[in-house]
Length: 90
Image 1: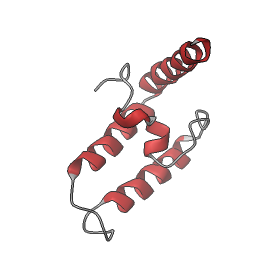
Image 2: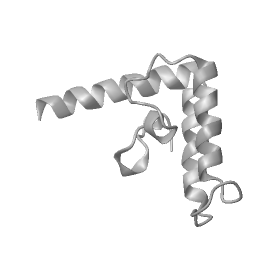
Image 3: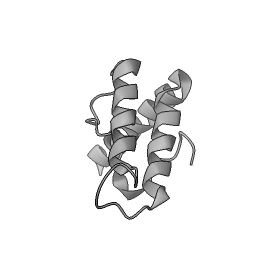
């Protein structure tokens, strides 16, 4: 999946990291803290009740990869805005 493609299940990368979708101006240090919280919450050795499915961890890593890179994040945010405008017109 690239920055052009939204994550599956209709969730944004911000939501995958436990942030509100409107958090697009969040500082990198807060983004990193959210990334670590999401990893801990989804890690099969650290949290109870998880099935050990690595797809959740893959989505978290993918979200971090896009949101931690300024260029990828700007491209992703523009795509989110574009998609929300399209849905507003439908």
